[in-house]
Amino acid sequence: MHGIAATPTPLLRCLSDWAVEQQLDNITLHHMHLEGETPWTAENVKHRVRSNSLFTGHNLRSAVNDGTTDFNSIFLHELPKLFKTGTIKLNMALLTVGELI
Image (cartoon, rainbow, N blue to C red; front, side, top):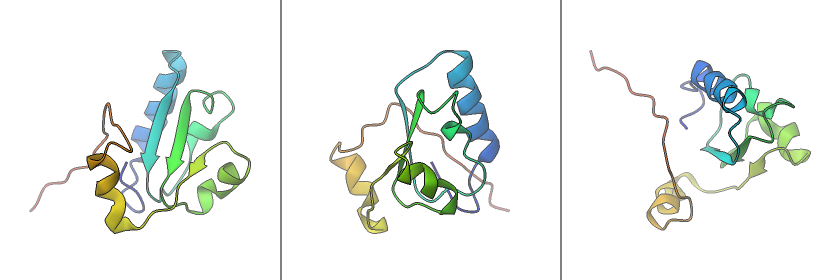
């Protein structure tokens, strides 16, 4: 999941709502620093969507501290290695794309 100023907040809200509506479990959201609201940490969602933060901002620190989300610190240049080696296995990716003008 892309983050900081490009955090797709509406998409994350929809993911959280969808997980609850479809009664889905064992979804892991791997991401860097995300800004804005964190709907997947809500009481009715946090047992369905587990956050794995690779760089944590202020909005997830309390969730990391209380064990609601995971935090695995990594250097930015090491991130692709997590996927290449299979350390993080992806079933699906949510990507933000833009148009060059």
